Length: 258
Image (cartoon, rainbow, N blue to C red; front, side, top):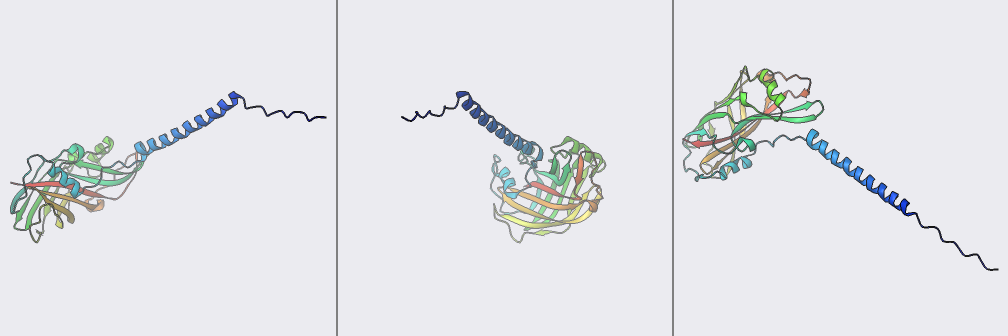
């Protein structure tokens, strides 16, 4: 008696193969969509898209790329004026003064609020290797951030630009460089003076970086501001969950000799 032939297992039905493959494809697409959605939410909602803080090297590039710039002066003595013809405010390569404040907004989360204005004027007087006078004036009414609601709010809240449209700094202690800085060399100094903000005047010492680039003195500075020192109340709005009780003032200035 012979054994009965073994019957081979039936091959999977083509329809079953297609269904299994389709499930993998659908799952892969769904996973990719979740990743894309997560990146999009981070980019448009939670990403802190504040422009980077002022930097002397970045600021110097505005002068280096300016057409017609001449080599640096052998003598710094004289009156230097803030030059508003360098760079563009659209990409923050021009002169500007601004603020940086950490805040938390409903539906968005924690972000760094940044507002800047290019409407800054002033002079610096240098005698030999000493800056004997620095006066800077800022039009606060033209501060602009990435949120129109914030720009509207500060007109009547916080720094109240409608009531106090001007901020000023006046040097009260000469800055001695020691020697004429070589062109392209960054010099770090402290500027001691009086800062007037929100109608209040306070003695401050501002750390600055300065560099002689061709015929321009480039100056950048970033320093802490305690709101209470200037009687500034934190803004209140349904959209604003919290705002720190301090911030930073930043500046990027270009001085050219008269």
